[in-house]
Length: 152
Image (cartoon, rainbow, N blue to C red):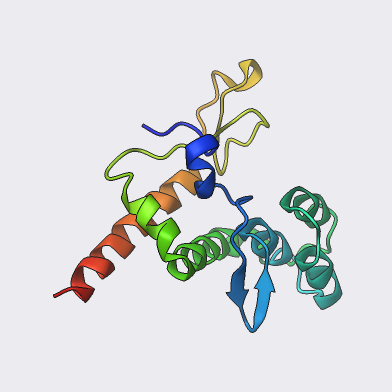
């Protein structure tokens, strides 16, 4: 089991620098894409796209005019952003595929029990949903199948 997305597994993090081409624009990280998708205001989206760090993009995303359908579409947005990252970077895809069947858990200490599984004492009895880890494992399966078919 991979229990956190740091050190040798930092490439699994949404904060990992892997510029993504989306709709003719370059986005520095998955985090930038995800946070900008929270709003339909193009000026807020651009401010997030240009944020110097994924942490700043995340903070900006907490202040945007939230789109009315965000709760229903945020999972699909995350899936698409993560899929773009690994489909645009073959070396990252190969690293993801090299994790085999290992469970991927976005362990953290910042109380994220939706996308990850917080390991801090305050959250120790709250099971994390680990949605990011689940998305990564699904993309790993999907792209492994696709990559396997392309060599036939």
